[in-house]
Image (cartoon, rainbow, N blue to C red; front, side):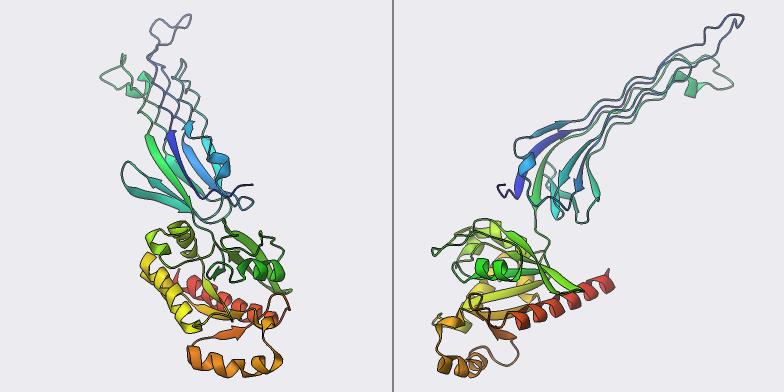
Length: 340
């Protein structure tokens, strides 16, 4: 299935039905009172989070969504039938924007959570509701209120505990395919990953986290180069960031700073997220070179940075890496729960 993380749709909720003007007509009741019923409410248009979805592909060709109008009220105080709601299923992490008003309508993050995009109109009251001691035979009723019509943009921001950040060909896809069941496309050329991929990483029976393999980040991405902000917005929802830097990189610390600079260019808060740095592809080093690696990494990054040497191909250092990421993700979950 193609990954689609942004769609524009037109939504229209249903009008409320008109209230009825009606009087009782019964044998042996010469003066039947008003008995016009209320109109039905118009249907609303909503989105609902479905954890089985990870793309907005289903809505790409369903760009106009119109809910049913409410039906008019009837005699004997019968309320008109309400219009059916339209419920659009979307992945958790979907944000809805009202493009006409230029504001965020809201977002859905948990399975089953719903958000109203366009509220249905309210049915009008029938003439039975207007009977008073001084007006025993009201001959008027309310019209229903109109529905809403909006141009809505739906934007998906992936919900993952750990987001993998790195330049093209840093080994992100190889890593996630090794530590999880996800199977992103892999090849020896840049920009293999054109769409995010999620994988569940199991540390042990009671410890697991979701890792997102994201498209490669190049210098200038925050200004739209490469995959630009299409990639960067998915980082916003990651609790922990894993920066993957190949050991063959000439300036290891410089590449980390370049990646952090792109995050700051998109949103300064992204660079402050908890992070772990993994220096990848160490299987290309000789044993003597690997022995010197801890000292080299400490000198390059400093003692405050958490830096772990790994090889996805040779499966070196992966248990320590996933354990460290789990601890960081767990701590971030606990912190978020306390704040909320």
